Length: 589
Image 1 (cartoon, helix red, strand yellow):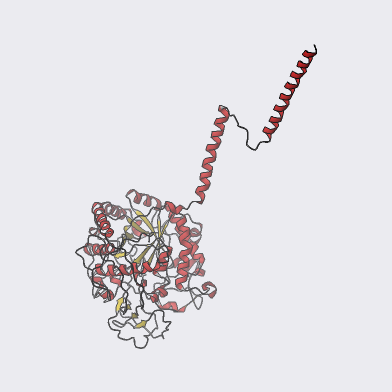
Image 2 (cartoon, rainbow, N blue to C red):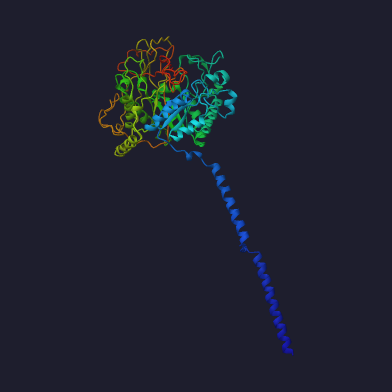
């Protein structure tokens, strides 16, 4: 009996011990750092998956908000023409243009979105544009027009004159350049000019550009991105509080430093039209506020206006540049390549070059030729031979020589040949120049002569000036010690039969075109004219300036003549309204 009791109690204590131990294990489990496994039923599992699916898009959406929209920008190798707002707003003319685009290599259309008088040419959802009453409708449905262009594979660029703006002179005079008496400065065509030192004007341009994106444009192109160059500018007074020690070139670059990243972030390409005369010319750069290499760091595309008719007799060693379209374009673009090579040595982004080429006859010149398909093609070939791939044609009357363009199939074959040719060429480099060129404004048929040595800090006295012709001359004396490129460009594509005339002072040996730079895109140059001649302006001596001593009769001088094109007038299909009007470039402190 005693034995049975002992066994009973022993079993009881064993059971109790086991139960107590399990309790302690449970307590340990509750304090463990690794969470206990969770068993999820079918319904719970579905809910969990649903929660995961809902959270994933939310994370992606947050990420998209900080993505740089510029990553989605798709560059186009532009081959195009300019049309005015009048033309863009005339359906019958647009129909004929589309037929030409369909049968040729042309793929780009530059359209006035803001005309040369400051009017926005279509309705725009912009509070500031509406507040200022800037809209003057020429194109009733711009969105539909852009959509139609896209259906035909056409890349649309919105042309926006920046600082020449008559409308703002009327409705926002406080943004404009003013004379000493407080009145708004007006050029000889009664156009007001915006004060580039006013950031409010930058924001206005920004708003128009964003409006362009909403309308469907993929690129904005700034024209008149400069100061007025007429002699009347000597009467203009700019508040030192606005200037803050910044030069003209400083402020134009700062304007683009402000606009470019904001527009790029929104997915827009940005281009700028510039004077061809500013390439390698510090004097002209200071006059207009454009430094070629520096401006190229703040745009995707830069478009120098290098029309042969805008260069004076003897420039680049060419007797009459207008009569030698191939040689003139090649020489100008070789200078462009050299300038941008040095601008990019510090690793900076530099724009792609997309020059404006001449598709009009400069009948106002004594020595000129009629421009047609042959001359257009020669300029395009020179562009390729200089190592560039894009171009735009300019004609103020919007009548283009389509027979100078290839078919899409021919252009594709040509592109292959150019690529093969360039692949076999060595990389081009340039030696630093030890001597700067002398720039001269020489008298021909009554023009005053002025010789300027860049960076000399020399000031010139003033004398009256009475130009006799409809154009003013800017003369550039040949460089006396011009450094030679280690491997200079000559031939890009299948242009074996072409032998461009060598620029003054350059080696006459064989030259090869360097491969394209591979940098991001670029914009155009033309002298400012009366109404909508487009990118334009004339380079001329300042009113009341006289030559420095010893400058008269500089031997072998070369002239760069920048002559504005005639106004298109009110009729879309109309030709030039009259003779071209001169626009002066002053050398100001």
